[in-house]
Figure (cartoon, rainbow, N blue to C red):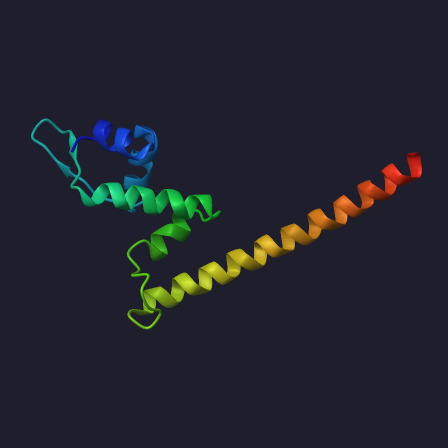
Length: 115
């Protein structure tokens, strides 16, 4: 399928799909006219990339784990890398939440003082 169809089926922009390809997250074969031709697996790949991006991972992070099977941590060493990456990201999110809770508390104190 051409990039335009892949974009339509996944909701990812053509520019994003090209970016994913430039980062090595996915590949397309080239037709004689130079157009990219993606196989049917590209839809699932783009949706996986979108999921990881929504979790706050970078494309560099995703490149480390994109081909990691999700069924077991023991299948391949790469899966252990995914687990480590998830733990690091979760720790970052928890720290951000702690900062936001502190800010929330301080704002509430200021509001209480004014009222």
